[in-house]
Length: 193
Image 1 (cartoon, helix red, strand yellow):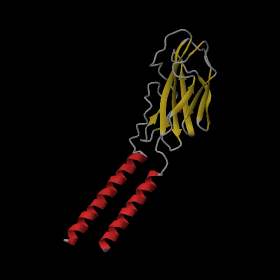
Image 2 (cartoon, rainbow, N blue to C red):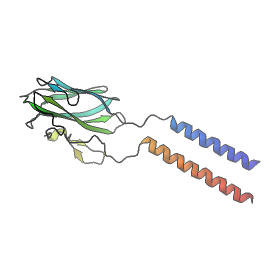
Image 3 (tube, rainbow, N blue to C red):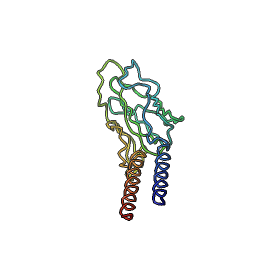
Image 4 (cartoon, rainbow, N blue to C red):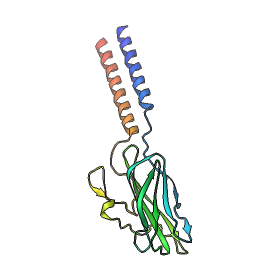
């Protein structure tokens, strides 16, 4: 009888740990919800600013590099962060063609989020690759691995830090707890023989 009480207590503890783990905050990082200009949007003239809205608040620093078709910088002034919205003013000579807005921001959970959008000014074709960003040295930010990176127009949006997500940790803990519970059950059965 005592053996069954211990197993019941172990099973109850296992269920409590699993239930608590599933109520932890979501592990998703910030993602781009919308942009103005939208990806692929066409304009007669250069818009006044690029505005990026994310799925959660953004922490400083944030970088947005807007590259004109001729490789020059079209972003002017400092990047502004307002909760989940990041924006930068545009200006300059505004040649016609494809513009690339590369961004690197830090989500609320501390993970870097990178990506880019392209848009067109004038009648030219949309180049999905966009022009290369020529970011100045002051736009470099520390990577979680310790190296410096600048926003790049060809960035694919992956954070690439190799860290485990909360979901992966939860699955690992669950598997470990079931393995321990199963081992204890086998051990108790062998001892009772």
